[in-house]
Length: 287
Image 1 (cartoon, one colour):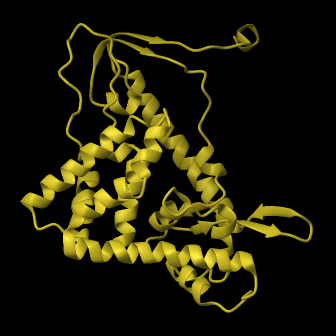
Image 2 (cartoon, helix red, strand yellow):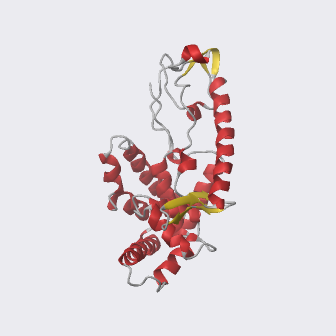
Image 3 (cartoon, helix red, strand yellow):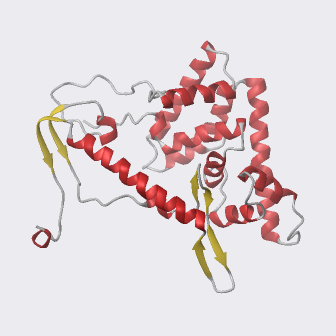
């Protein structure tokens, strides 16, 4: 029996909607702004984001965007004009949502972002993300319920979400029906935290560490800021700036610490028997 109740706060596609809500309230939050700009909603690629940042690397990314819109540099460059147009459309949409929230409420903003933008249908078309539409439906209903019972604004909703995250309580009600005791439950290690079972099978232990977060084109950190690649067009080469290298090392250490914590959780769920399985193609050499 698979446990698919991942919760709103553990699903990237839903966290992205929360990030969108946050930048409607305050676009000065670089991490959320860049997440939305890089996504389905903004459709900016890494090269475009880097060009925007180069004009102003000292201030927030939002201010870099404004500087890019207002700059007269490269005025005749078609690529620059195209990026400007995308930025203008992007921030006009944010302003549109601000006005919508004032007139129609925050639930209408959620409804528009999820359904009217085509985001819902976009996820439904891909088999790997189709199940998330169920969570999105649940999210819209939850926001509507909260809005009925509270004087909800963008600011108060964001504060509400932050408090839930801090308390490690998910906004989602349990979508799963009651399960019979005599059943095999398949779940992630994170989902098993705090639970115990007579027998636990920890599978696929041959899988290597996930270093994707260290290989992204743009790395973000609250301490070091934004790490990007510097592009030298003359020699056709790109290399990370000092901030990106620092962030990569920080992420590497944090990832190792987190993986050790997760492994500890996995190894301490069994009451009677723990079975660890994995595939080693070079077993004889590694024993």
